[in-house]
Amino acid sequence: MLSIILPVYNEESNIENTYQAIKGVLLPKGIDFELVFVNDGSKDRSFEIVRKLADTVKDAKILGLSFSRNFGKEAAIFAGLSHATGEVCAVMDCDLQHPPETLLKMYDLWEQGFEIIEGVKRSRGKENIIYKGFARLFYKLISHSTGIEMYRSSDFKMLDRKVVDEYVKLTERNIFFRALSSWLGYKSAVVEFDVKERASGTTKWSIKSLVKYAIGSICSFTTAPMQLITLSGVIFFIFAAVLGVQSIIKWAVGRSLEGFTTVILLLLIIGSLIMISLGIIGYYLARIYEEIKGRPRSIVDEIVKSQNEMIE
Ligand code: UDP
Ligand code: MG
Image: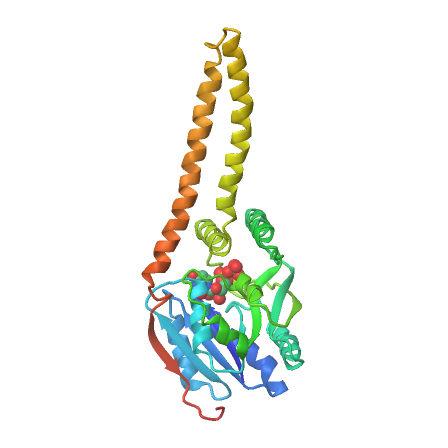
């Protein structure tokens, strides 16, 4: 059975269509499937629709999880993967931006023995310029520090049971699905897909949440920002050496009172560098604190299951 994990946040207008579209692709091929809807604290009727699907749908298994509040997409993916029962799991968006037809290609590759099948964006679809630029910068940073090319990567993936079992064993709270699946290793394949336009509704990301997500993901995956501090320290040390020699020479020739501007500038630059560095270290400290508290990634408030025993 194929489990499809769908994070849902205010998607009342899309859930039914997504189900129909997935069914339309998988049923003719005779692939048994389970839909795992993870309601990430939606404020609209999303979960009622999931509940209704669980009651009425006969040709697939439906599992609905509902969080007690919005915990974010990563938490939703994680919860979905830990509750999914299929021997192969796929993660896709609930807004039909990830075309269900691609599932078939992924499924083929899985049958050929690949364990991670990554959906890669052939085109990034319609996005505004700020968003595009931002995404480019974000992935540049990540690719640079991790060596994983991510600009075209997405959360659209299919994972073998083996991989899912390993993934849900990871204990970190701040988890980053997109990059971790490549960290896990395994036999992987890539499928290109075209990002469709959102079926309906609007994107759930504000610039603020994106910035937060980007910083969080970078820091959860790499300590490169901390190495940057060391690097800037080294650069300034070189400056210090040069200026030091210069000052001593000036002192020796009796002109040591000059250079007030240099002093002010140095104070300002070094002051702000120290502050920024402290901020970066503080950020990592805060993350360690978060991790050490060991709170659950999300709180599942309610679970609904379809009752049909047709597929077991
Ligand atoms: N999503 C979520 N929690 C959030 C934000 C989004 O579960 O806090 C889900 C959303 O319902 C959708 C998927 O994540 O299924 C992708 O969201 P969206 O389409 O808004 O992002 P975009 O495609 O614009 O990157
Ligand atoms: Mg989307």
